[in-house]
Image (cartoon, rainbow, N blue to C red; front, side, top):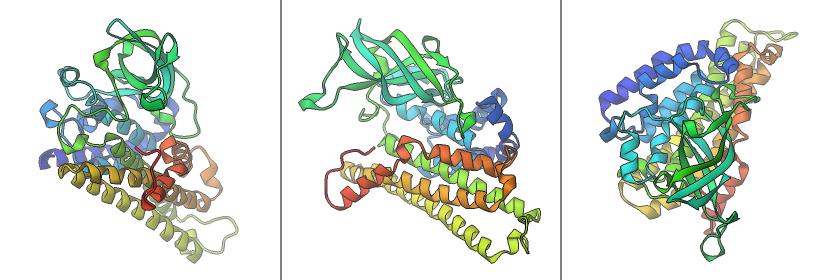
Length: 390
């Protein structure tokens, strides 16, 4: 990544952050990012940061990407999440044939894709492509996306096509224009309310074979270390959002203490309480440790990719997949400490700490943050087969 681009991107995000924080309640009420903020995020380069320079993007390195996503989530969790989804677009589109990738970026680098990873649709071979039907939940940013994808079970005569050697049914993702998809207003949630994670519905729509791809193991059509192991990179991006939410809660807590916060019936201010200082100190270290782990793994993954060492990349997959539940636990512990200490006022909708609390607990329900992923690292350490890993 060019140093000037890195500076331009990071400075633009820092400039936007205070406004994102001030407008967090507005973002929640709208249940999506307002159009003017989306325009400013595009202008800042947030949605093109991972797009290769050959296609008008910044070609951001992993560390820069993590820093940007954390800074946005620190200002507002929903904004960090929404940008994360949109910024990962080139990693998905790179699984298409190269001519399709070039075509999609021909009009500019700020292309945004939304959709669903879970195979909640069916795709039947038809006329050089597939006839697609399905409903996908949690399609974050679907209202402002340029394209929608849905992962599908491949079928023939309505029956799932088995994978090779008795493996589960074959799955493949289908990329469709937004005018071929219906977005249903379903996003009413505990937290991350501003992400617009509605359902998307496709009713018997034709998708050309050239706009289908294997989301889990498709080879990238774009060269470069930034497109190696995209799903592992997505896990690290998620972790950066969790760390940003937790750091934001710590910021909010310190701001509350600066205002002289004192709990009812307490003999001293919260800032002067030795017991609280222990909790706050521990929470800060949780966040620092989580951030350091993500950066270390990002460096390891980039090093293995740059060295062209597939074995080293594969060895990192179970460790990276296990990192997210651990990072989520650490971030949640930090936010919970802030919420408990903030007293009754934190229960009000007007409290930014309450929003952080709701955001991180909603985040923790994501499938990639499930505790079971920790078992991958345990199996890897024991030399046992890893049955499920990004």
